[in-house]
Each structure stands twice: as structure tokens, then as C-alpha cells.
Amino acid sequence: MRTILCFGDSNTFGTNPEGGRHARDVRWPGRLQKLLGPDWYVIEEGMGGRTTVWEDPLEPGRRGIAALPIALASHKPLELVILSLGTNDCKGHFHASPKVIAKGAEELCKTVCRFDYGPWAKTPKILLVSPIHIGEKVESSPYVSFDKEAPAKSRALGALYQEVAKNYNCLFLDGSQAAEPSALDQLHMDAENHRSMAEAIYENIMKEF
Image 1 (tube, rainbow, N blue to C red):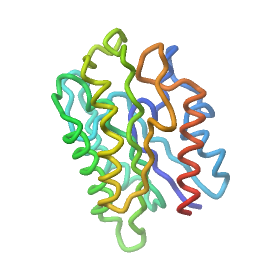
Image 2 (image 1 turned 45 degrees about the vertical axis):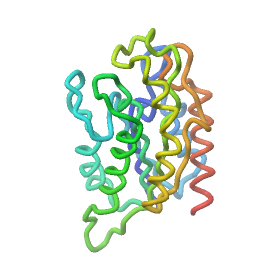
Image 3 (image 1 turned 30 degrees about the vertical axis):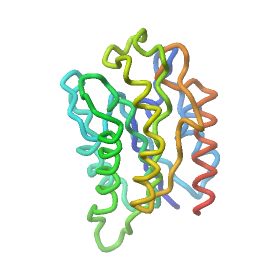
């Protein structure tokens, strides 16, 4: 059985813009599991507020770079690691440019590539997914850390992430070409967009495997 680790933020966790959390069979990792079938095992590792490398004083314990090695050790051997982070790096109090956010994504790729998997587990392939675009009205959403600059930052990430993926021989998916946020909160995907994200990731995987 081939194992996939889905390492991401609230859109991997499945935060429902209408409140609560989408059901497992609605969230994109659960949908991906159905598409791939019983020869694959899809592990969800999504967390609301998770960043690439930043420690958030308003939401402690969300540094992806700190949690990723733990997840790699817990779930090896892995065939594929899907990295889907960057939205929360757009928060105003990080003052991070799109290039700096992409550098954070690069550090995650380095972590996967350089991790010591031991003598019996190979280094997994990486699928780097750039974030869906943040809605233009995010300042009016309940998520107060996102300012008026956040949408533009998110729109700049696709091309930068693609370059990171190229440099580290990763698979790449521009998340904004697959899905978009709900108008309700400008950040999180509804059920239909989870479906389209799962299908886009599935197609990407099938091209490689």
C-alpha cells in the first residue's frame, strides 16, 4: 500500500465556511482517498492557522517547519508528501512578501528531502500545492489577521511556488487553478471546491504514478 501525507492548514483540515468542519468524505483528502482506491492510504495532517515557518503569537504552535519532521517520522514509509501551506503566511503581522513566503515553502521541501528516513524507508516524492487565492473582501471576514494586502500576496504565490517545485524536482499544482474560497469567509473552500481540489490533485498524482 502506498501512503500519502497531506500536510496543510485549515483547507486541508476542512474548515467549513458555514461553520465547523466538513465531513471526512467531503474534505479533499477524504475525496482523494476515494479516487485513489484501496491501494493507497491518505493521511490528513491539516491544522487551522498553520504557517510554513512562522511562530504566530496569536495562535501558538502552528509552525509547519516544526511539525513536519514529527509527521514524517510518525507516518513513514511515505510514497508522497503533499505540502499545502502559505495562506496564513499572508497575515498582516508577519509582514512577509510573496518571495519570503515562497522561501518558507522551500524550507518545507528541504525538510522532506533531507529528513533521515532510515535504511528501510525511501525519500518520498513531493507535491507542492500553492494556496488558493484569498478573497478580496477578507478584511470583512471574521479572520482579523488578514489585511488588505493579503489577497494580492496570495495571487503572487503560484508562480513563485512553481519555481520552488522546479528547483527541488517536486510535482506542482497551482491551487488557485483548482479551487477558490467561499464568499462567506473569503478563505475556506466549500464542498464543491474540495471536490475540484481533490480531482486536480488526483490527476497530478496519476501523471507521476
